[in-house]
Image (cartoon, rainbow, N blue to C red; front, side, top):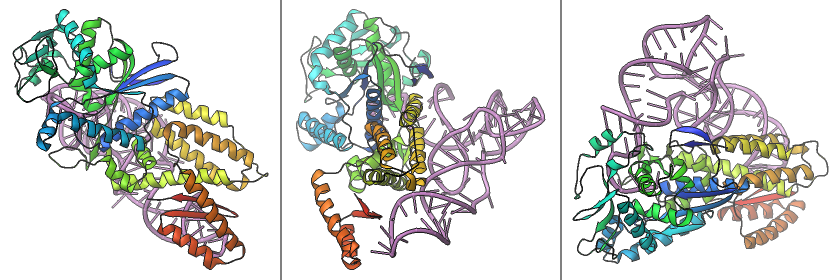
Length: 456
RNA sequence: GGAUAGGUGGCAGAGAAGCUAUGCGUGAGACUGCAGAUCUCAUCUACUUGGGUCCAAAUCCCAACCUAUCCUCCA
């Protein structure tokens, strides 16, 4: 299995630290606003990765942090006249709900930063003991200059970093490139007691405190959006390695590309944020998943209606094929496939740096080939085809979920309609179909088998 | 200015030296009670520019230009 490691910027053979066991951490959001399409992309991708690794037999502990104490949350709470924790709770609940709808259920545990203050303080103390941090009037800062590998992940040298950091300095720190570990309380802000007085953690420290608590000081995979490479992930490396003395924080760093709107990154000032829940008003979760993984994970996705429409077409095509196979009933048929060989081939494609786009291309070609031979598929062959589709779906999750209740009622309606059709009572059968379509339920007759699906 | 990833049809996007795939779109046909789905065929002035290497360059080398992201909070 090959992974493109941001650290070193090259493809590497993946070897877990402990055979069969993978510890994976992916940065979660700051919960101060609605979840947007960018969160969806990153989380859908890592959800696919976690599920794929599990499908290949690994035991994966997938951990994600939730930043629930931060300037943005405090500002938001002030604007709305609420407690910061109310704002954080609200948006965290909404985030979890949306992740659930997107079928992102591979995360073993969401770790909220505010529940790890003891670990955070403990880690800052250790960093200070090792001489990598200092206290000033407004906080505790990491002495970047002392950690000589700083810049390794983002491939910058210390001089460049210092030069670039010399713009706006609002904090009291010794050197512009230093970053804050602990912020001393300003009037009206939430706080925790610490050896440096009342205050709260800086942004970077929560991740290493949480990962150390669950994984120890070194683990396998760290993921996130590529906008986090610098300074966030660089800072994480400095914090943990300065204490652990080990060569790595995470062995493999995987970064996903941004989702742009009209070729530009989403931003508050451009007011071009697209919220995930708004997309889900027009498209199904499976269609959004498809759109997000039908490209190489490290490239920019330009979000558009066209992207969603063509994704929807492709997902419907896959689902219609799957439903046809489910309904197929034929003892005859010369079409034969080697399911194991095809699955091995799909695995080989995924093993090349989680190439979901190529996998989808091959998967659609596989479906197209079966469609061409539809007349020659026996029930035995169909069950192999179903097995392959279900294997791929076990990590892509692009087969629509049907409610059991819906299925039972639809079976009855289709049965009635087919009775009408067999008597050539097309007035009734067309009327039923028209009524169903008015409720976004589409049906398709294939000989004496009828399949159905729900469109948005 | 520095770092990273890129620049291939109307759009998306493969191709890492050998006639530029494929999908979407568009047009026609087959199949079907009709519709849908599926299939077949067709279609689209496409390799950023300028040099170089080579029998041969989208592909390798050099230069330039352009785009996105990071260098300030970000998934």
